[in-house]
Length: 81
Image 1: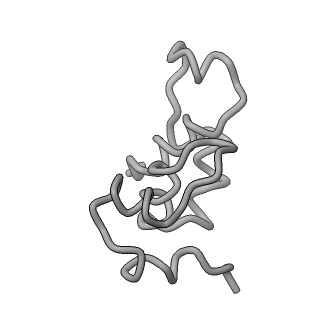
Image 2: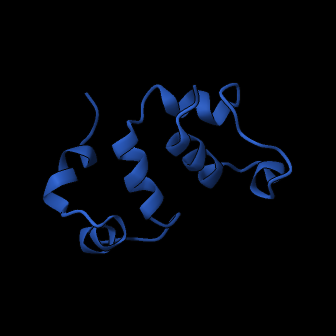
């Protein structure tokens, strides 16, 4: 069963034109999904989807988009062990 947030994040960060334009759908066998699913939690994916690509974003702006306070997800922004 594919995790929906990971699929959305994979589509957002991919560089494949056919996926960006919607001609090809991402699934569990796609390299974007395979790479992200093993290292990104659903909470991390939710935060990444609230950000723009290559645009600096403050925690307050992310909090407005996710309707959560920065203190509730600050642990997701730390580096993985």
